[in-house]
Length: 312
Picture 1 (tube, rainbow, N blue to C red):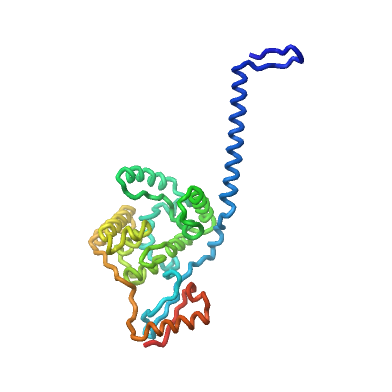
Picture 2 (cartoon, one colour):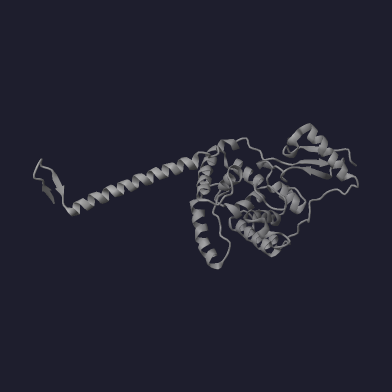
């Protein structure tokens, strides 16, 4: 109830109404403060947000390779071991292996896969109870945003940026361009960035010559190359490879017969990339590098040049 004041006809709130009014003011003040804090956080979060449009013409740095006269590789010059492979040259089976392992809904979602994230969260409940490694739930588009445009800091702010950039990437690039970036940027261990370098370093062959089992093994590596090292942790590597082959069969991307044959294949890798054993090759390669630097500067280490020498 309100009581009329003795003068001026002023209304005076009784105690219950007074507390309701105070509570209302407090709630509105809290909402205003929270809104202001969110605005400040958003401004800080987005002030240095990379531009997804920068990736339209992006090409990762690739190694310059020196060959003997007979075509044998004798040296590489690079900061990172990488062989760029255009999307049209990537075997469908290899791309499908990565999709089965990392993002089966890649061609359906728009950057963030809510269903995939939910599945990962549910599996993580079981993984945590069993003491197993937790899953991230990031799509391939989110991984491209993280690997190319962001740092790898495991913070809430970085994850928010990753999700927002993933949506922007989907609006800027088509699916094939995003998958091309991913398959050429991903760290796969064995000194390899991208599937082209990994195929050569692990198996000594071009990606076009990989078997189903070899493709599936490479697709196991984004979860942590050391976790599935082909020699030190061979059993884990084969188990993960076989799981991916099974996923590909379940999705109808390979036949059951081909999958069964691939499961029987042993995991054999080379200890180091093939290289000619010419007596004077090391001296010769160093001279090639010196002359290349004089001509190309730092482009030698990132331009992906093919250098054929007179060594025979």
